[in-house]
View 1 (tube, rainbow, N blue to C red):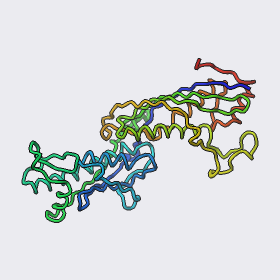
View 2 (view 1 turned 180 degrees about the horizontal axis):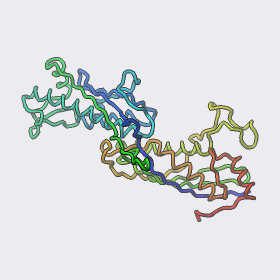
View 3 (view 1 turned 90 degrees about the horizontal axis):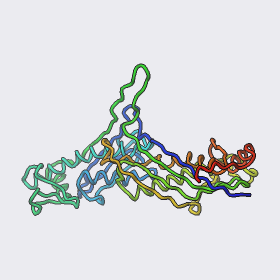
View 4 (view 1 turned 45 degrees about the vertical axis):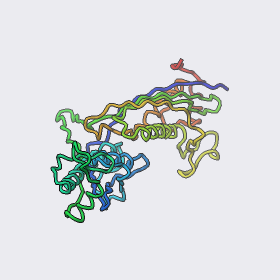
Length: 341
């Protein structure tokens, strides 16, 4: 028996969203009577942080505290239209729609405040703390709450906005059919260090080093957590998740999706992460979002690391001990490539 070390590398360019029918997302923003703001979406938060980032985007655009913004993703019947939470499109598509809706609501808010302060709306600004003041004269101010009360109970206004974001249609080359399906890409490079046991076929990931380009990290901690968690999801796809019989007998394997294996907290390994910020021109505040890109480079990197360690080329997920052992048998034993040396 021997333990073989291997290192694998993979890099990807990942398209943000798609171009089908313009890939639209819509958002609605309105104020409550006490000056809070509700953002209505049909874009569901699957745990990727949709509510957090759209809340930040709305607050920044409105010029109010994040604590005064709430996001409702009830369902696709009561919310405005959205293509869905897939294709890593949430931050880019939904975020742009929220900016447009929040900007329209802000315009209504500033006009209502201007009427109360008897100035032009263009002479006003927000401080991000719940106040609207005259530029150059911060003592002349009104709170957002007071503005909302005046608008709805005195002026007869609604402080609301609607927004939609569409991708411009891409021209298609009549000769080749070539087109541009998306407007921006995210990028990643990842290295996996692992060990392969040539007696059992078991693969153990030891360390991950990665770099992700995400446009701008609108919520740095959320981005970091998503990248690390997503990478471990990739490890799970690569090495664990299957309902197939595997080595040595069926008794040791899962039988359905309720019992199949997944890595737990005890299997988490060090992940050294670099987040590169290259703001995208058509993205909300430059942010493209990491999305599915978190997991994608992990699978080929693990496959390359196994090949580096023992010379077995795995090309069918997941890379179970049985498949590694079959590869070792077909190769006549471990034949390290030593690319990592």
